[in-house]
Image (cartoon, rainbow, N blue to C red; front, side):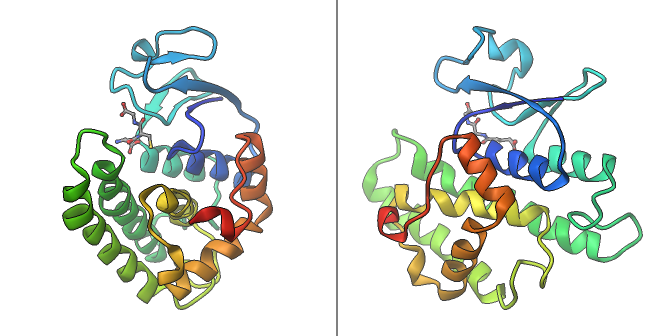
Length: 209
Ligand SMILES: N[C@@H](CCC(=O)N[C@@H](CS)C(=O)NCC(=O)O)C(=O)O
């Protein structure tokens, strides 16, 4: 299997899931600006959408879309601790969060990353909208992870989004539960491994805002 990724982007969530399941994978970095991979391939030939993550399965299938890749990996490897089996209602709670994080939180960050969006619009519209959604998550984070004491697929995805907040000058300490959750996740061995593999270090709170 191979993961096409870009450092610190949402593809990091797939890497965390690969580590959680204990899979062996190759990794190839993608330059999202030039759409060239680190071995010089034209990335648009691999994924015409131009985005990461992409996996190439052992059967040479190319699979795109973060949430779907995560589901595929968990199902294929029977990682029911990350995504409960069909028929278990908790599966749909996990998918409910996964979808929320993908469509509301992740895509809510899009305009804040976009250099063409005027700062005023970012400050007046997009930042408050994202903060409202973070408040919603914070209110629901009464336990260790999103779904009680079990680390599941959306926790990996949420973790990655939380690493982006300093880029938007959003201070995670506004939300006590989210802040505690993020600090705990930074200590999780599979996340530490993923960060190390991508040469990232979000260790100290002081660096973050
Ligand atoms: N619909 C895709 C979107 C993934 C996405 O937004 N990836 C970003 C990195 S976090 C990206 O590759 N952006 C560059 C681009 O789309 O050209 C998914 O859910 O996997």
